[in-house]
Picture (cartoon, rainbow, N blue to C red):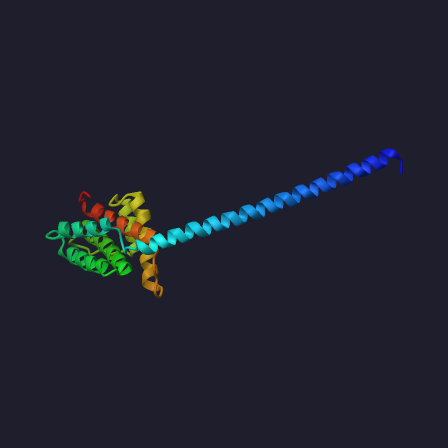
Length: 195
């Protein structure tokens, strides 16, 4: 082996050793970062879970207040809705959020049916009330509800179906809050009552 080959071999050997050291160091840093990240996530999740255990509420207070206000506004306008809202208030106070949400969904559907009967039936012919999905499409086409409300009502319908057809179905708190606030908004929108 001549001098050039020896130098080249030594340089290649050094480059290989340096490369292996860099790869090992980078791998070690990644493992350390992953460990730190896992510890941080576990710590944050632990803190969050502890907070949720200490501050657990069935529903935020504004939802309860909106249901009470809706009930008061429907008294004298539509007694069936007012009575249903009274039952929903009782369910909310008892911590039975899912059945209360099903009640709000039932109110939305029945308000749409009532509006359909009032505006689309004539004395000569009795129109058959369409399915809930078709009723929602009809309401959107006739501008009874906005496009956003139509999308929300479809989501509400799916949540109601889940609660109705699945055993021991539960919703997470964010979904519950969204469904309650949205349902209340739709009920206001359908009767033209300002929130």
